[in-house]
Length: 577
Image 1 (cartoon, rainbow, N blue to C red):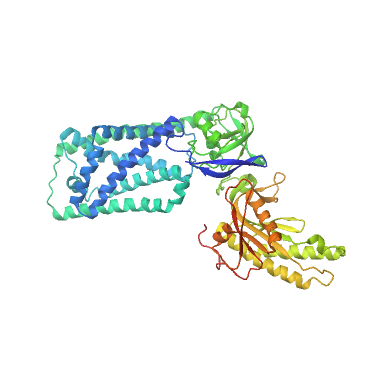
Image 2: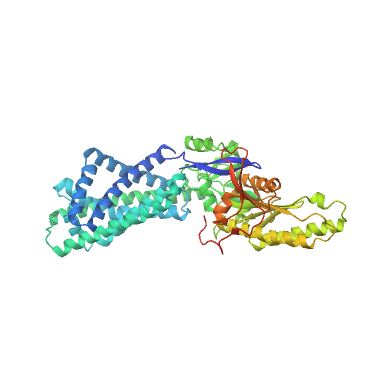
């Protein structure tokens, strides 16, 4: 899994670009074992489900495929590895469950937990028949035998088992791989695989079983005594496994009851929010229990850095970071007072500031629902508008005329920006900075910015026609547009509802593009990234490249003297880029 790197903007780390530096070898030894054991079990499931899929062809095809499947997985060495992986994965999952201090977890974590606890209920009978009878009585679990035994009375249970196992695996894989850049490029292919595999496996299972049921020529080679043995073995194994599950769940309850009588500590968050907590839980768990949103992409496994917090007070009272936490913090060049909320267990009062925002839920406290107060990083389109040669235009003019012209330009341009869904960030003398796409996404934001540019062009033409004879020089405006990642936050005193602004390279680049209009005599300087994001068609534009500080690849820009040739798709995009 990738870990976001940081830049420092106004003293707060900001997520920039993730890089692939987290994988099976990252995290502590328990996390690595759990991941590797899960990957081995996943490989077995893929092989087994592919074998099921051959039932769409014929039962004979399933039998031939099983020869290869069993040749790999019933090899003594591989079979021992598979059993060890299953035992390890279950034990570590139960250990992690027992270590929890709360079951207030994101829906995907809760779904994976519940599905994982359900799997043994239907898997144990299947294992006792296929492996138990084979080891103790020489039973050969061929598809002819197993499909006849399962169809139709136990078919639904087996289909549910297949789906539960697959969904449990897909949740784990998705939230492990989703920060890899290559995974994001192939996410739709991965989604197709995730859907196609269980569909074809169930199809093959049902089709093969139906064919055998219609043929009615398969004799079951399991005696009633052997089935009784399998039934008793199932009961015993279920008692052991679900006893362990009960112990792990009891561990959560026990820790909760113990904490009720233990001393309390106070965790203070931005905005004056304070919550009481019991020592022992991680800061991430404390936050979840009190409905304080803290991001956690990896589910608290110290693989990502999204739950990082800046410890404003009490950092010296925390234990030193363990190796997994140190590795993550080192990769993002975090300061000494930055820690992972999923790893620290406060014993004393603590004051923290989350550094990566997360959308608040309906139950979140009102004081933390404003994500912009915490700081939000997202892709937006930034616009800079400037009045050309303002000093020269206003020379020897009456103060009234100057102020009237300036206010008319600013009011009409701001109205044009707002009419297209933009947010006016600030007025800078005779310039305007605006943001598009904060709520609508990059694609719609790019379209809105281009439409707003057309409106501002009309404002320029209207001002020039109505300026009066006292202004000899023509009224000319310049616009710069660029898209990229920005930090959006409310800058000002605590509790202020205003002061929302954007920070980051995209702001500096948009300002630089606006200045390029002076060199080319153009009205709009727009990066090709904005045009591509809007899916707009631009003809008769001058193309150029500019080099930005710290960037190896020059930025491609388009310069236009008028916007008549710009074709923008009608309406807003239904899906954003």
